[in-house]
Image 1 (cartoon, rainbow, N blue to C red):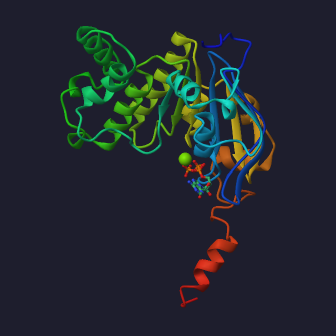
Image 2: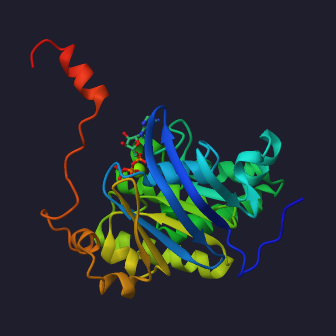
Amino acid sequence: MTPATNASTPIVNFDGVSLGYGDFTVLKDIDLKAYPGQVVTMLGGSGSGKTTLLRAITGQINARVGQIQVFSQDIAQLDETALRATRQRMGVLFQQGALFTDLSVFENVAFPLREHTCISEQQTLERVLEKLDAVGLRHAAHLNIAEISGGMARRVALARAVILEPELILYDEPFAGLDPISMGITAQLIRGMTDKLGCGSILITHDVAESFTITDQVYIIGQGSLIAQGTPSELSGSSNAYVRQFLQGEPDGPIAFHYPSTPAFEKWLSQQGTA
Ligand SMILES: Nc1ncnc2c1ncn2[C@@H]1O[C@H](COP(=O)(O)OP(=O)(O)OP(=O)(O)O)[C@@H](O)[C@H]1O
Ligand SMILES: [Mg+2]
């Protein structure tokens, strides 16, 4: 049974969530909502915890404090079967490649269809070519992964993430490695998929300008928590020093460029014998 979704019920709902690894807390006090038909953008410096948030939505890691609901279910309470069924309702574009290097472009995109549906070869062909066409790679269907460029691989991964036309799509850095034209087309594709399917889309990116053209809500994370939230125009008009530094890419301000020192680093350094 799959709980119904409607536009007034969030597809993803974080309520006072803390996330971390081992004894390291990456984020705390996170409240976040994504509704059907919305593109929600997550901005934050490198290492601020964006991919960690995405892992929490897919149930790869659990909240230490608070609750994460996906499709109105507490993701931490799902057994393995229910978690698998829930993940089938999501499409994920992972930050790191994750294409099958021994399969062709076509077979990479066809893979979720073959795994999760019983549609005919003809239907598979049509659906895969339609999605490849949307990312401009229809005529690359026959190529091996070794024969395509980094930016093309990103677009193949994007086509694969949306092939099942899921209710929730998570995009981790979909613009990475794309030229300006592909970037603009990809942004419009994300907006178009969201409107057409009425799905929720969570977009993780560093590209403020591109994402702001297609986004309903923006969340900015940093310094271990949520710094700001609002529509692109609300945030563009913000006087918050952190928001302004982030949106304008200024080197000076409250956001530190350097990864902070930790006891674990100091211990490692003291063992190197050169410090
Ligand atoms: N598996 C892991 N075990 C321990 N620490 C981790 C793990 N994955 C990430 N971290 C740490 O958690 C923090 C957040 O990492 P995360 O990958 O979520 O950042 P990010 O915002 O996605 O960064 P980027 O923009 O560079 O992709 C970092 O300090 C990172 O070192
Ligand atoms: Mg990341």
